[in-house]
Image 1 (cartoon, rainbow over the protein chains, first blue to last red):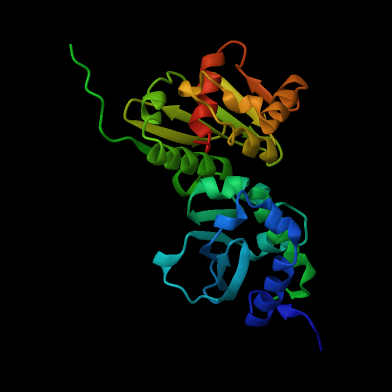
Image 2 (tube, one colour):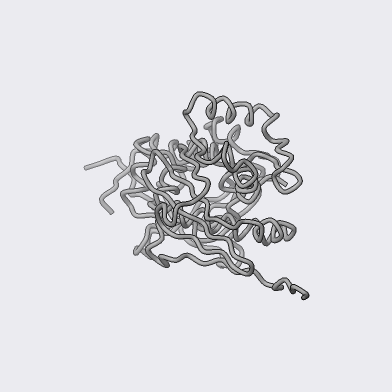
Length: 137
Length: 150
């Protein structure tokens, strides 16, 4: 019996939303949190079942669920191998470095946003480490 | 003789799907910058030698070749680029947020807190810009091409 939550499951998304929203470093990392209102997709490469959609409103996550938005409504799409997401969550590598090494792939969206909000991205991914996660999914 | 400037400017990755992370990010960044700041097309056409970025903490590099009507980004440092920026991911992010005016010749971003940090890293050789002293205009133009600041 384990109390770990399966990565990118609905329960995991709920828990991750809470830790990310309560992490001030995420909010402070945005260039302008008041205007950070958008929808984004995070996905595990090659795993259709491991795709989640996040809706941000002024720097706060108001929805984090398995895929539910139309692709056209997504502002940013970020893909990575399961191992890359885990390394980011464990703090082994920062998100920016994983992007520069090509382990996380910026599939859609303005690179400007990724650069200007890199600190938020790094802390956002790092906050996942506070969720007890079952990575064998 | 009249020279007609092409009305379109395309950007490609020489290594296609095998492009490394630096090449992917640089090509996306330059392409989006040219879309968002069409005036930079004139700047892109002023490069007559390749320029490159080496990411020291991911140990990967990419070289950009600007031509009159297109640019190509290749993996690694190739064809003896005239300017090479050797920097960490954090330093690359900082450099790309420096505001540059007049096609890079008025580097106002260097007079900000972030810019002063970049200058300090250059002076202390934590960030190396090969070609900065021998080709300063090209180095400044390169930063202007990569800048996401308006």
